[in-house]
Length: 298
Image (cartoon, rainbow, N blue to C red; front, side):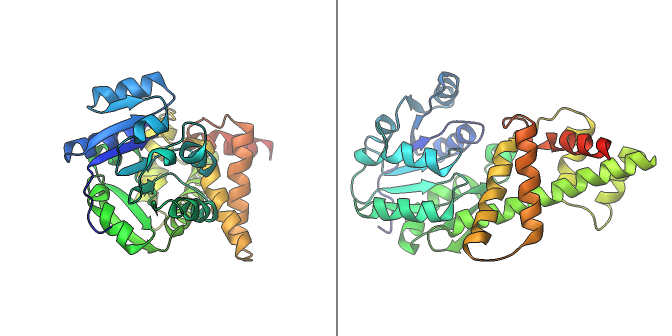
């Protein structure tokens, strides 16, 4: 399949990212059918111009493309193959775009099962958060067969500012986990730096300003320390549990490849322990609270 003929898309997962991504697809002229367990999410999707359903199967009826935007690979598998799953309603030639932060090996297994029914799979996780989902400027990391990626490229373009082709199926999810490992490591370092400097007596605002004018600058120093941590709003819109999960995927990938990466192992353990100490649904910027608690014990 080299050109997308069917412009009906089923979007499974209408959370903080799904609805704005769907809005951009609607604006690009696609017909959107959505699915979510949440009544509030379905209502928001319909207000945005889509048609909402309770089950993935109902949403996938007549769709040429299914997009999954869900918390993990287990839920993706259930949405595709479980009771009321979308795959049973798809016809040969349809393509699934898996935009969750999934496990590369499981993505490859799902791809094999879909291929047996003549359905393509592209793993295309995103980076950028809700703001860039609204703006249509997400970064997308796309893995899969070249013809499948080419067929859905216009769909991806409607949601993204930058699309990177990462290689074979599962490579997008591998890259997403690697990106979030680097992001999570930078976040932890920036938060500990703030705790350390403040304990010494430095002004927190000055700490942030100097980091952002110096080599310590990263995404957290620029976009999170002042906005969500110093303000104590803890409202970045990305859950701590999801960050811990993504970094854990990178740690598992390293294990499977028989690589000893001590920094990755330590960062994964830190985020996992924070998730156990705090609520998994806590904003990921609340890692700062966990780090403060640990620092106070020393």
